[in-house]
Amino acid sequence: MATMVSAININNCFHKKQLLGATIKNKSRKISKLNWKVCASATHRFDVVVVGAGIIGLSIARELLQRTNLSVAVVDAKVPCSGATGAGQGYLWMAHKTPGTAVWDLALRSQELWQLLAHTLLDQGIDPLEALGWKKTGSLLIGRTEAELDQLKRRVQHLSAAGIRAEFLPSNDLATKEPKLEVGQESGAAFLPDDCQLDAYRTVAHIEKVGSEGKGNIKGVKTKQHTLYGEKAVIIAAGCWSGSLMDDLLKDSDIVVHVPVKPRKGHLLVLENFNPLGLRHGLMEVGYVDRQHSISSSGEGDDQVLSISMVASLDASGNLLIGSSRQFAGFNTDLDAAIVACIWERAQLYFPALREFSLKNLSEQLNVRIGLRPFIPDSKPVIGPVPGVPNLFLATGHEGSGLSMALGTAELITDMVLDNSTKVDSTPFAVEGRCC
Image (cartoon, rainbow, N blue to C red; front, top):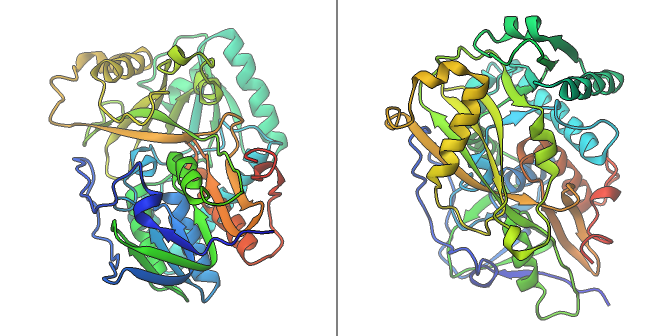
């Protein structure tokens, strides 16, 4: 017999996250005051309840509100964009994704939807740079060894065959694109001129504003005391907390679902109004691709294994973003000065001009973002209904690609809730066979 989930007790569900309102202290960002409504009564009924106010949860709410007359509640332990979404770099790149995979299809659909949103804003007389932090910078995936260059040349062939504009740049052409990048004569890059980036905080503020103007009715609840009833659907989109939320939600039923999502900690350096590199594009070392999908061995002592990859870009506010680290360290979000130093040293290998600056002397301009990416071992997000619970849906496990897959995920989940056919094959992302 199927189980129906109609109520979520917020105090129980977020047992690992205290459900209190919070202020984000982030020197490099001005956060718009979002118009979230806090209800006073203890019980609330909505057509759809979305748990998680990162880019995935908010995009789902936006999609539902724009396409239906359903009432939607979004609930989170903190303010929107305070988790992995706000700690990220904001890139919407196809350069490091592999054509022919399920993740590729979802990211490509999302890219189409992001571009449509940017063009729609332009048609409305709104600057996408101001509204979303949208920049069509193009991306450079950089290699420094013969093996890496061969890998990049194959990648360019595959990307081109998939219909993406891509070209291989030898070292001389790469130096023309980014004069401050110094990686030697044996270097090269895959160049994707259509890759874009956005600002997560501006984008979330825009989504919240659009949501409040949608067909339906959106309310965000931040409290320890409320129970929400989702009459049509309950959607768990809480990043690396989704597994524990599911365990708690289903603890009194005979439904067994194990969501193998785990937090993958990352540090990102933000230097305010600092651009001695004159960056023109988003840059990423090719090793990032392999490290993104790697996982430490199952030994208990290996959880702290750390990887550092050079990623650099300039955001819409003129801040230099340099990353990044990947580490399995549980739910720990403490700043690690040694990791920050490693990221800076890694960047100096690619940009020797940075050796003229010490992080100590840049302390007034430096802000370090720390986030927990929702990692899934098979590198595919979990998106879809929970078997045996017709109105319960999952949308989690996007790791560091939440922004680049957000709109496709939102479209996918909304079509599932409405029982419509989907534009992207949902089978590879299914809960069944992977979580139960």
